[in-house]
Length: 258
Image (cartoon, rainbow, N blue to C red):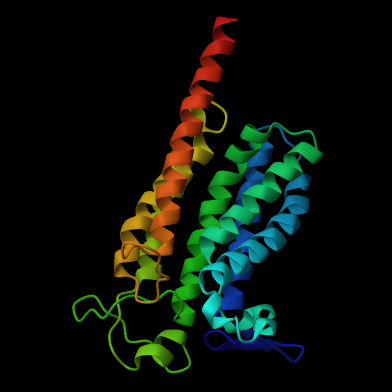
């Protein structure tokens, strides 16, 4: 179990991490339903989408983490299934959710880019709430920091790895960044340059924030040149999103000229 038990219901233990995911999903759904209604799309479709997105997100988050931590699972592949022990990568979950979103929009004959804009505020809100849950569970903890550090309680992942030492609350700072991004995305809703702008803007700003916040992480996965996996992913995401922005701008201009 990640973190500690918050309460029990019908004999089942509800841990901090699980509660964070549940609250994040609920708030994301409520905000996305609101955005769908404002955009003239049946809000009931949001609940259907949320089911697929949640499953795809968890699968993507787990697969992503396992790929970059294979040495921890090579000797016991069955442990890959024990997701309650930790090991979910948010960026992998984001990738899984995007795949589910494209599939769902096409299946229901919805404009993909417009649907992406509708989902963007709820998605980044869910990510923010999820990070608060991570903080409560002692997951995604930061480096040792006497000035801004937080001492996590016994039973959390941070405590098990570092003991009673002050660690930078990276998860809370990422949650704050996500909430700021959500506010800007909502403010730009009526001023977007093209369909898909809000979603791509959200991806770029989140990736920039994530790149720099990784320097404060104490549990990052590493790749080449001493870069964290999340930093490499952020760079790739920014480049791809900027290219897509350029393509969408050209497509929008061509439609206006026709």
